[in-house]
Image (cartoon, rainbow, N blue to C red; front, side, top):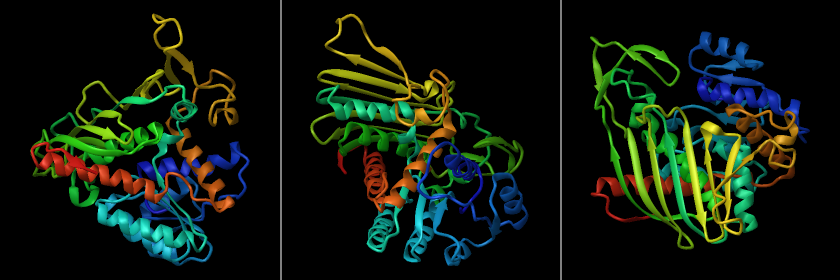
Length: 380
């Protein structure tokens, strides 16, 4: 694994946990983790359960005892690491968004397709697909329960940047992150919406805004943000704080998307609602074990019904706790490992593939282009 912060901890938990709750066809061994600071990476390895450390990710690619590279670093490093790993015959799991540009994502996808022909596979980490309620939503749409999809509404609302003195982290530097809320959290709802609806976005009209133009360079870093030094130097914020856009999908559905890290009171409200000709469904990650479903064939005034997604027949849940005992954020990463290991063992392309992630990257690029051109309608 390359990187060991927020995503590194989540991925490490998944690699440790998956073989203990699921019967995997291959046995993952957490061989090595890489980070630039030898003391910090050694401490992370001890805490997270890795056997050894490296201070240069290239050593991971060179090592014969490593079969898979898990990329958990800022987006500006994704392309170089992933392409090198795939060319060396390693499988790759790469965090989202796939890259910082369409050009990088295209090169990564080409490398993944070439590597696949040699038996090495690549997956992009859109982990929300593995939330049981969203996997159930996908099943319902595929079964025809919603009929023809007409509306898609997608939001990802957080509030951890509302403090104007929160420090200037790498997530606010476009050269490292590629974009702000658009790529950080907006990518998740684009992927989830396209995946569940079974249709890709074909065009967008977008608006983006940066509310706080400068932030403290230093300070106390807590979680994703923290508290900056009020009297110290400040640096420019070069990414969006909020992004919103309307969209059209293949097949005629229309969509509304919103991603922001300035929605006070919303901590991790990743929301989706789909309305079809026969039914509708709704989901909010802040109530992640529930899926709301409406069947138009029911009593017209019955409204939505709440499905508690903890039954053994629901996706993934039969391997965990008794009925009614809910799952958490970390379980989606475990399910991601389960599906990736299964795909590798079966010599099948895992999903979402780099090609799937490239489609998301193209939507993000169209959103940026539209917002920069007075919200002009922009084809994907």
